[in-house]
Image 1 (spheres, one colour):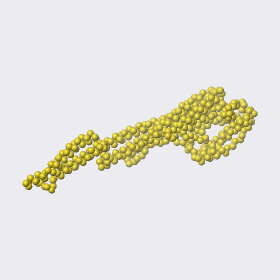
Image 2 (cartoon, one colour):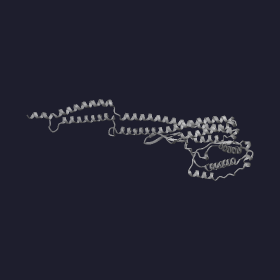
Image 3 (tube, one colour):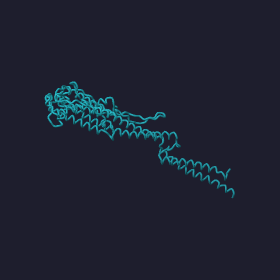
Image 4 (cartoon, helix red, strand yellow):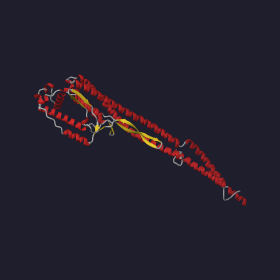
Length: 405
């Protein structure tokens, strides 16, 4: 039966052509974008997973960039610590040389020790990257916590420095305590009566002032005669004793105040997904306190004066303290090197992980260009055939006209 109202063949041909055109449009879009899944309507599950993985990949890349800044900070700190260590080694060598030093080489040796301490301070101040301080370059050591090398009761002791942070109020209290200290002035007779470590200390105060003034140093024999103490000598001695008493008051005021400087820092290295949970992962990098070590070297250099350099107890304690400080500088370089290597390893892992994520996303959403190219050619042929079939189906009603002739 034929009908002029309903052309079933044309309808079927048209439906086939529509499907071919839809498939052709999809293939052309995949070829143009390179994606087989570009929206949720293509494959909801794959689209959701791939978008989450793309987000993870972008976060890992951003974290890797942040780690580069941290690595540069650690690298600057490590190089500074290694240079500091080299100076500490030289300081130790000069201190060992001083074990058999005579008075003629004391002044040059002490000058050299002081110069090494200045170089240490310079290196510490420069061992930062973009203001990031991992070596205590800001110098958060207050006088109350500086290292000391002092003689008491005829023997010498070394107290290492400790770096702490203080509030403005705590420092104000300490300054007030120091300013309020008064010391009884010693005259020539009282000075000459000093013995042991007190005598050594007094002679050091006097000779430090004489060195500054460019005058000849006072010997121990001269010190024992009260008439040899000039007004300038007594002024230097009493100023030194007052400053020492003030420092003691300052230390006492800060004894229980302040918070120790952090010795490590947590650095974000990635993200962690477990079920519906999301969190960041971290590693700890080391911070070191080179300023506290420099304070120790300075205390030893300041104490290595003419009167002390011949004191066997001083020399033994000073060399022992110097060696301990050297070990501390070696430990600082080692810790920073370990931190830098940990960051490098983490960055390498992040790069590999990012590549893996990108590969996984590509496997889910990228179009197979070879297959799409072959499919395009096939669909183009199907489109031509469907068009021809529709044309033939539409010619059917024309054949009915011949029945009415």
